[in-house]
Image (cartoon, rainbow, N blue to C red; front, top):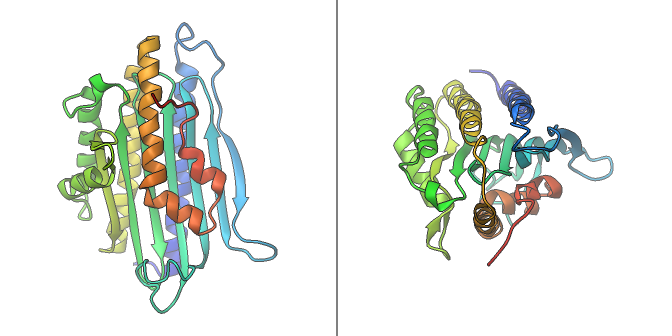
Length: 290
């Protein structure tokens, strides 16, 4: 098993590689769109480097990649690698910080809001965190925005879950049924009494064999990279009505509610000095509340 510094380097290198692969795949879909449906020019990712810390204090940073295109109304694929000390508010809440508040964390986070209501939105995040302990965590979940697609029997949801089950089944660190149930519990809006979408997987504090945990985390990213472009390719050919667009915008309001009220990642990022623009890039570009 590699030493702690090598673990950090290998994890961060993977997140950067996956960011490049996902951006390339999404730009390819932008370029392949039917011009009779998508008349605008294909979008390209704009990458922006950011730094954490103030003055001469180096606390890491990351690269934000944002696309505003014709297929993807807004897509953010961000990588970060940060370090420092947790505030008194977080000491004791994060494993391994009871006696030492220092931490190191790297990860990739993406959110995709397609323009076409027939194409589901999607979220993915995987990360490696080091305190006095170290672990992997993450998840990926699908959010169809039309009621006709928001059920477990839809073709998109079946394909999505099958890809994630295959990734889980191939690795000792994967437990599809456990992670699927965890996702369903986490991505739920209590005040609406409804799920955010049709699920996926969610896992945290994965502390088995490090090599196996990294391999599984890579498999999650690869599964997303395989299945989501397939879903987009199939669904982006469908034309939509003004009524379907209206339904999409209202459904996006639920997404905003979840991220601001319940999402731990949003709260964690804002309270630990993260890049505000990157954290809030998960918000849909256009949204309505009836």
